[in-house]
Image 1 (spheres, rainbow, N blue to C red):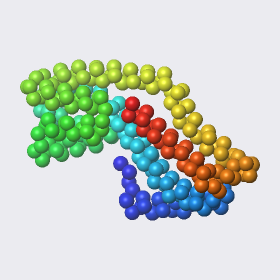
Image 2: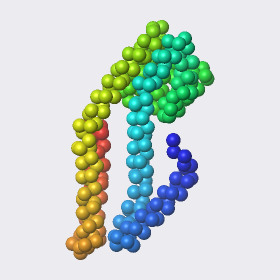
Image 3: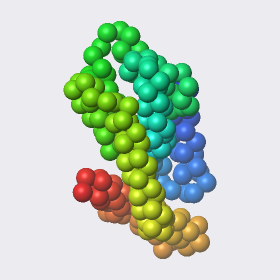
Image 4: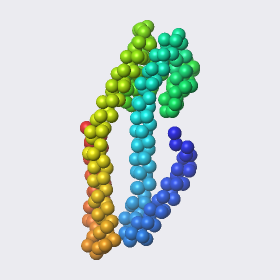
Length: 232
């Protein structure tokens, strides 16, 4: 949902590279090689990180809406609407981001795509347990000719319990998660402070190849550790 053209993004990225280079070399006094290294990498990796965070928040917002989605679909089906009509009603009345996703689902159905295939696309676009449960229940119950309205009511209760449990887990782990964000920044802040107060002490880090290798090992090792934790 970013209202930004690729050309505009590239222009902003290029400007950011220039500003970062000037900041690192002229204001902080680092070597031109290190300034070039930071300027070429930071504007590339930071937008990717921001994009992942926006995608994660988008999925979380959608997951919080899933109980309301199940309730609306169940009410529509009990009122006598067909499944495609119930999906169209959800696409018209639900707030974003559910509105966007169900408009896409409704468009697929209008073009003649089978319901089972269309609903299976949702968890592929937005991975999550709630999305997978909704897609499985809809596909299986609809394909077997069962009572989808009752299935949606049961699914709503399950999703509410699941969200409550996840919220409790987030509350209990809020402190460690904040520490995990702050701790990697402490060595960087200390390095910048020493650079400003006692530049001669850490001069070899920035003016020798061995020092630059040490500086590069920190972000590389942290990135590998983060990837390993996510996979685990």
